[in-house]
Image (cartoon, one colour):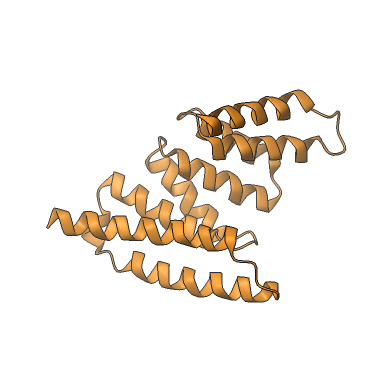
Length: 169
């Protein structure tokens, strides 16, 4: 029984990751086709996630994983979605050590335009361990925050160098 439970969680995680692969690699001539495909695939992913029995989502670690995956799936679209933020926030409250949940929450909040809170999420994610995706996002966010301010080249370059170091390793 435990193997079946692990299989469904692994499958839900893979489906969520596959959505981001589509987001990052699928570039049709009509951008609306990409949005439609992402919406369709995310609906299927949510159905799979919701097929996990409620009793398998009761333990705090499983509940955190469920909230994280649900938020990640909802956040795959280009626009900000409050529902995604709510699920990701629940995930990090239930399990603050989920670095990828902090990363997803930071990306979600960035879409909302709250750059300071997004940076805080990325820094919290980074505190869970070095991660090239987080460093890349922090570097881009530093450059974005610097527009119209005293440019923080040092911070952006520092994150870029750390990203390159992790990428090479």
